[in-house]
Length: 258
Image 1 (cartoon, rainbow, N blue to C red):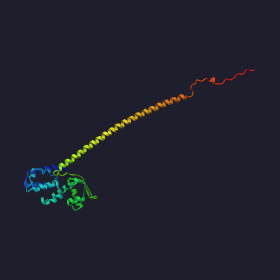
Image 2: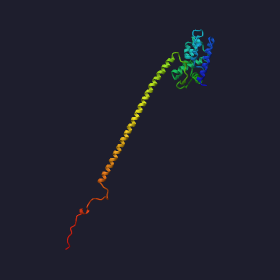
Image 3: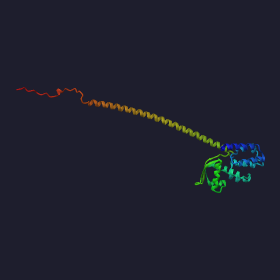
């Protein structure tokens, strides 16, 4: 079973429990959801009417806790710990794992120094063990670079959207779509230009070939004319000459015999 399918089943399970619980029992459901080792999405639970109705009641701190797990980080929890329920070890681990996802949203190369500070980890060995566990769970994939002291993120699961973040995301996607459309138009124009240049090249080549053929024909005709003129000026040996050999030869005078 992949992580997405498992998430969907767990989300539906806790949504059903939250829908059928109120008061302290609902607080327990929230505690179980934030402690579960395989659940990393909470927005659907937050949208359950019974959960929303915790606002302003004696159990409202559990609503705040659920919001912290949906959008917050370990450092944010520490700053607001006085107004939130204390965390069990499983919840601490979960919130630190979610913190890694938040950091990975902004930077795909996470330095060990930043991670140790954000996660309250005291040494590299402990940090790498923690990151290996995150990869084993399936929420991140990446490479531990001990030489450069960083974690190179190749994949990170997305977290729940913060209130108002959806509008910002839609705006970003709209800008991306507009840029993509403009880029597509530019590419199409380049293709048209390339097609036009290709046709011109073909036309020029055809014209050049035709001119070359004309030149060849002209040269061939000239050579033929020159050759015939040469034959007329210098006929081949053995030809008959219109020539009176007897007339060209001087005649001898005959003397009478005495």
